[in-house]
Length: 154
Image (cartoon, rainbow, N blue to C red; front, side):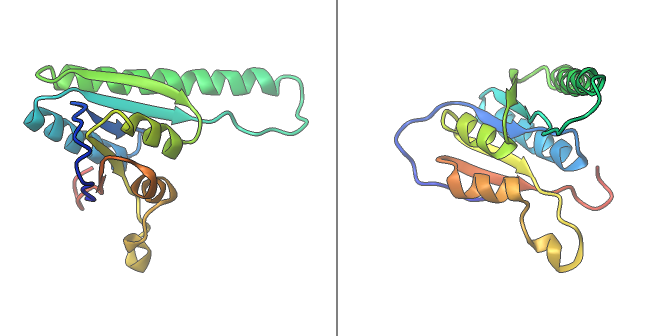
C-alpha cells in the first residue's frame, strides 16, 4: 500500500478495478472491506479496449462486436453479484473504454483509495508488479493498495 499525503480534500469513495480474474476478486474483497470500514461507497471500474484488427473477413466485425458485448455483460453480472453480497455498502460501477490503468487513474482523482489486483507469475517475478498496478501506483493522486490473492484463496 502506498499512502499519499492528504490534499485536505476527502472524496468519500474507494475505487477498485475489476477484470474478472482471481486477483481482481481479491482486490474487490479488500475494497469492500475498506469501503465498509470507512463508511463510504465502493466504485468498481471495468475498462476494456477495442481490439486492434487488420483486414479480416467481413464477418469478423460482427464477431468482435459480440465478444465486446459479452464481456460487458459479464462485467455487469459480476457487479450485480458484489452488490447482492454486500448490501450494507453502496456499490457503483462503470464500464470505461480505454486502458485499465488510465481508467483507474482517472477514477482515482475523486477517490481516497484505489485498489488494484496484481497477478505475479511465481518465483522472483512475483515480486514484480504488473503494468496496470505499476502505472496506477506511479500516477494516482490518492493512496493505492495492490492486493494479491492469498494462496489457496481465490
